[in-house]
Length: 152
Image (cartoon, rainbow, N blue to C red):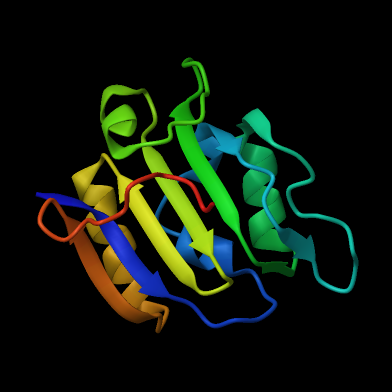
């Protein structure tokens, strides 16, 4: 069974999270954000200043689509707006939670996505290829070696 996708992105400034999430309706969700390392370009101001439980998707969408930034580490998890936002730490917790989507960025270039909506997962996979990202692969029950859903 397909769980998600992995791929590599270029290491640099831009609007890369917006490009990755193009097929996903970011504004329709509330988000957990781990407050990891990401900075607006040309400034030392953090893109995600602190760990947030319930970041409004409209605010996240505006930040990632309308500003340039540099992402080193990111931990984003999407929840329906009427559900409690928590930090799921394992795939098993994710499966039994209301979390619908996980995006992890590690060391500026390594992307892991989990998505419960299989049609959206297909869209995200094809978008990654269209964006020219490298080594785009599905994560399945057989090849998922990740032990936790965090960047640390």
